[in-house]
Length: 128
DNA sequence: CACATGACTGACT
DNA sequence: AAGTCAGCCATGT
Image 1 (tube, rainbow, N blue to C red):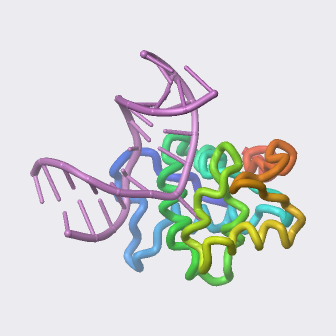
Image 2: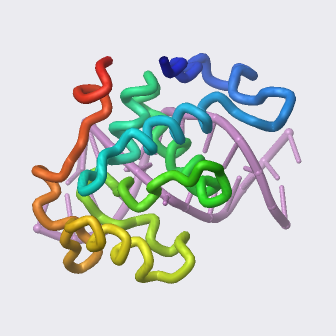
Image 3: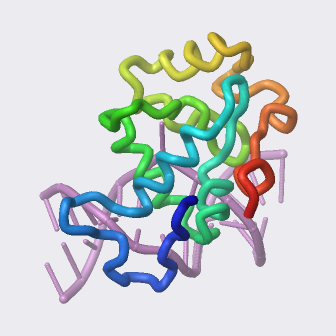
């Protein structure tokens, strides 16, 4: 199972010898668990990992997610309003939306349509 | 060391 | 309803 994020502030639990970070690995694991056609948010992932207030760190991890193997469906992570705030980090500005629409997720004005129904909560679906 | 900058969020104005 | 602030914390300058 996933390890919980270390919440003791600047504790060094987040940096390991190989430059790999537990938080990073855990975030990748959660993102890989998002089913096709569903989306979740940075905050929901942070909450699931036990760091409600560290959603920015989740976003930071996503910034490096493009090089991990196996690849993670980074396009399924949006902000709390369903907005595609990470779109500019994909190969092209339209790539994120294209990947979502490929799995039948409609996007209008950079926002996921029917976001409430598309939302996938890791806390609920993976178990707290 | 100080300061700025984020793929963020919730509270407050 | 839209803007601002305050937490957040790794990285870069």
